[in-house]
Length: 528
Image (cartoon, rainbow, N blue to C red):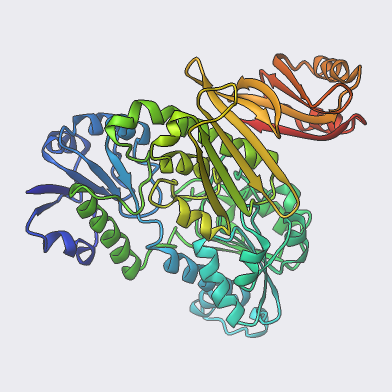
């Protein structure tokens, strides 16, 4: 008998699969205290939570029988993923269950905003009847711009197209042909800001995406444009948003999520009549709650019976016999993927990974999953694993190719080669483990050798005297400390690359100065 504990309020209909299974015993404790959770968890095989319960390292370590923690929803911020992975506990979520609910709420906010529904309702309740004050706008023939083209965005796109809107999107990890299949024109960010009548955000919150829409972006939009955010708080700079509306640079906004939740009583958002506010209702439908609960319950059944989870969040489960050997190469593949994503910011149509050496005789699907995870880092809310790597890549219009070369003539016993193909460019990076650490050893077949971590400056140039000196002088004047420097070249005075490690992230001004050097054909800054 498997014991499953629900530590938060979970849909009864969603729990039905577990309750009907004679091998499972469900204990519902929706208001359980942290102290009581620590007492009960040693007897549990699975734990289901929503956003209230904090699944700390202490809880996970106390779960002597615990095999799986399931989040009945999308976010897993309240679960210590590192501790779970170290203890061999699988973490799963339900990333697709609330897609329709979030999309429908986006549409509701869109229509409420254009027809002033909340404001007109409040006005009528105060005894007024001023129809001329609340004249709205039609959405037909307007331009709807979506930042991100994931599951929720595609659901929204279906509806707004039926409303007669033209849809444009920006997403560096989506191919133009993929967007076109969904009736959407792929454009760059600046074009989307300039042309859109409505700008809707559908991306996860990452360090890179924090304040994705801020002062600079609002300066580029139409004065009649409106912003929607039913994705994550922090994607919009709330102070800049209020300021843009006050200055007439933006017509209005509709927000369901906020940088601080609950929204503070003194938030300037509360006092702006051009901003519609809802208290994080994107996933709050009975149907969505039933679906996410059912999704995680089915995964619990699969995992406890020895199968694979459909939506695993933490590291893939590696066979014990291969664990010690493969895990460092999974990490290496992830870093190669992150490197390629930052070198070529245009979405790759195809990712190719070749495993060279004795490890090619093992199951390399885990290594491929690591490569895709790196390539899509910061783009997806769900972690990539051996179960979903091909599916997630396909959703992004990305083809995956894997090859094995057990026998090879390269200088490293085991090596990974990863290639990203875009519409216009082909980039290749090779990596190997040296003294147990992941190293990048070649870029576009120019051999270099450096640890794949930290702040990296990468440049392309024609090898000639004085180039290295110019870079050194520029960085020195900018008080940037160099930790290492390598040059790879085809031959003297021919195509070359320079790889420089720095102790700190380069400022925008330093990067601009580097790009202005006539000797460089291209410059990239990489964070690994």
